[in-house]
Image 1: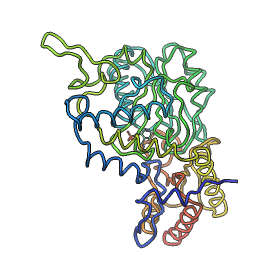
Image 2 (image 1 turned 120 degrees about the horizontal axis):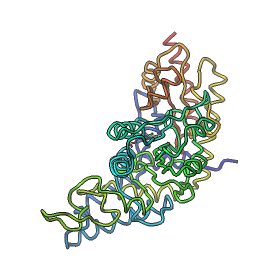
Image 3 (image 1 turned 45 degrees about the vertical axis):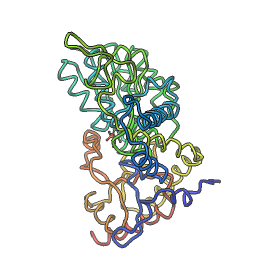
Image 4 (image 1 turned 30 degrees about the vertical axis):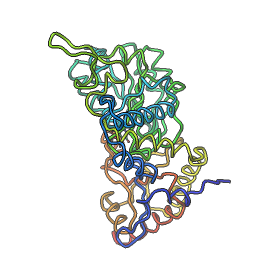
Length: 407
Ligand code: PMP
């Protein structure tokens, strides 16, 4: 029995309650970004209304309050992913900047000519391009772990691709394009056995499942606030303290220094060494509120509800016919990525939008994966716990109508 009350939860999200193109909005683009609960919107508004000041610097009350709230948010997020300490949690603009930080700092210091960086075929561009740039700069090699027809990582191929020249394995917790939940623990164990470090792109992880970076055993975990009900422009890099300590700064500026003189500069301690300039204070506070919100829910019931939505969508799709799912991962986030046979995904997306149903179409920033399946893109319906079975019904009613208009 699923007791998750999605109807009650969705009332916390004001943007869900609106009319789009003469229809009640059905928001199924949660893998791109989730909507924000009132608690997050209020936390950001309250900060600007009452406490706005720069952090860590001025000796006045507002700055003290801003600093306390900013650092409290860091503590919440660190605890949320079970970081060993707050100094291992570095604020970034999001997953993309977190990965670029590792490539630009750890990568530049540790990757040499002839070394290999292993990524997977289902990565988002943000977990491909920074490694490609690094490999080009260093004369290193980018190695690609293929996926099977189901859209799952080919673990047999991993055995042959991993050798002691692989210095880093960079893989996503879950695929944003197909939903595939990757066996990260198994990959991490194998990568460690050849001495490679592991970065997990957690953009699609943190919103759906409890993340425990210590249990995972990875070296770096990158994620975005806006995909877990927090504001845009804020996210984090978690890294193992010994690695972060040894890494050179990523950007130079205020806040990241200990002492500056023209004869040389010394750098601040963790995490500030990697936080040059005035940070996204409001964003961090909003993300702290998002953590509180997520933790106020029954997370396992929420995850079960999301899984039930996907099961229901797959069943409706089978009944409906004329739809082809792309990949069929056995363990997956609540993402249904598909094609309407004979139609371009972009046309389908437009016809759904006209009926108030928001999905994402296209390559989902995973062009190599689209190439693997020899398709230009997919239609992607990605569910969150605030979606309902009625939303799934609306999707399929809209698809039926789109087909009548197209064919
Ligand atoms: N990796 C994955 C798997 C993603 O889904 C996304 C966002 N679509 C990113 C990385 C990039 O995240 P951001 O744009 O928030 O930096």
